[in-house]
Length: 252
Image (tube, rainbow, N blue to C red):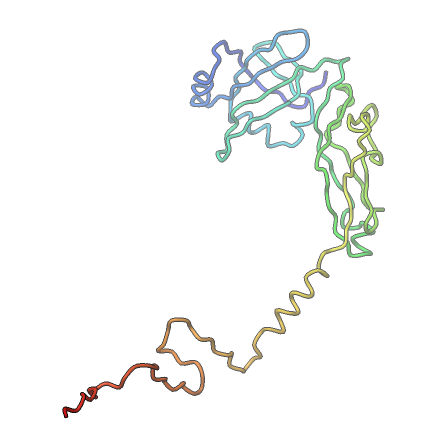
């Protein structure tokens, strides 16, 4: 069976969180190889070499060769655990692949002719991707690296569904088998019209060039007077003027 990438691995007997932490400190990645009649085997791989392979998009949707010593097993990458913020692979899952057994795997979608699309070039629309990859079901020899989606004939407010994709020979989509004909890509009108009214209101409220903006009173600041004329202070009601003493009663 033809493989596109080769990964050199080692079998490991020690398992558990402590063993995995020791492997990571030594620049290794704990992994597991499962599938088929054989038992699952824990592996360890070199972190730097694994990252180098993972930088190529094709490795996620192609047959890999897992080499341990003199033996090589065809496999596909089924799961990958990454550190939440470090550029570090924490764990990898590989599934064995056999010539006559179908496999299910996610493959990327490649969209072509987006700039020349009728709905974009001629009608001013915007491309919207509902999917970036799809799960396929096929034999290993039919496994595609990607599925091409040509959008050149797509008009404004139109969609391309799963059933309209041109699939390679021997490739099926499990979603279609189960009756789910989901949309893949669409062209919709830009939403600029919805922003016209708010922008017009903002422009109308903006001050004219050369005109001083109206001053606003600042609460609690009695020293700043923003009006042209300072208001006169009012005398508080009910308070007797200072300096005058109340007259006493005259004696008879």
